[in-house]
Image (cartoon, rainbow, N blue to C red; front, side):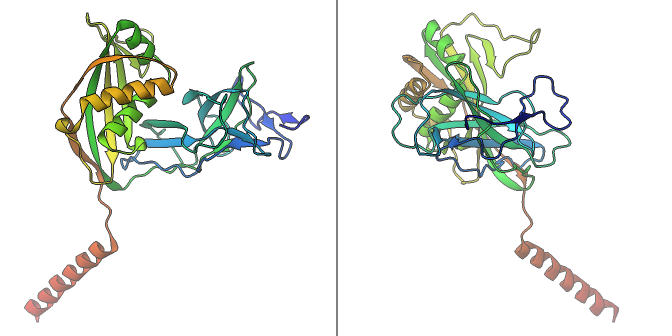
Length: 311
C-alpha cells in the first residue's frame, strides 16, 4: 500500500467491528495473480448456489511476489465490496519459493443457499494476512454472482471412507482445508473438473467436523477410530457419469495423500471404501427458440383444423 492513505467509516455502517473503507484512490498496489473474475453459479436450482474460485499468489505492481503473506481469506461481499458475514475460507499461503504465477494454485468450492431476498449483486473477495497479523483490504473480487435458476445438470452423490491412524484422521479431517483436499483428490481420481466436486460433510471417528455442528447440536457417535468419512456431491453439465466400479481405490488413496501434503498434512492411508453413487437430474429444462417454434407451429395446425371443421 501507499506509505500514507486515508480511511473512513462505511456510510450507514451498523456492523460492530467492521473494517473501514480506504478513501485514498489507488492506495492498494497489489492483487492476486492469475485470477479470473468470472465466477458462475453452477447450481440450476433457484435459491441454491455452487461456485468455485481459484487464484494465484499476491503480487505487487512491480511484478514481485509478496512473500510475507501468511494466508488468504475469502469473504462474500456486497455490491460495494464490504463483507456481508463471516469468512468463507482461510487458505495458508505458500510463498517462500514462489517464482512464477500459478493461476489455480489456491482453489475453493462452496455451496449453500442464497438469502430469500438475494438480488444477484454479491461477489467473492480475497484479502491477505501477514505473519505479524496485519491484514490488507480486499484486493481482488469476482464478478457479481447471479442466481442460476434455469437449465439442467446431472447430480451425483455418494461417500468414501478413509482408514488411517487415529492421529492422521484427526490431523487431516479437522484441517480447515480438508474439504478442498478431498474434493481435489476425488475429482482427479474420477476424471472430473475440481469445480464440479463439492464435499458436503466430513466425519472423523464418528463425529461430524464439517459443516461445524452448532453448540448443543447433535454429534454422531461411533466406537470406530482412525476413519474419515467424506460425503460428496458432483454437479456437472458434461454428460459424464461415475459409478462405484469406476472409482479406483489405489488412485484415490494416492491422490488423497498427495492433496493432504498440499495443505501441509502428511498422512498414510491404510485402506479405502466407497459407497454406491446415486444419480439424479436437477433444475428445469430451458425452453429454446426452436422448441417454442414447434409449439406455435402445432397450435397453428390445431387452429387450422378447427377452422376446417367449422367452415
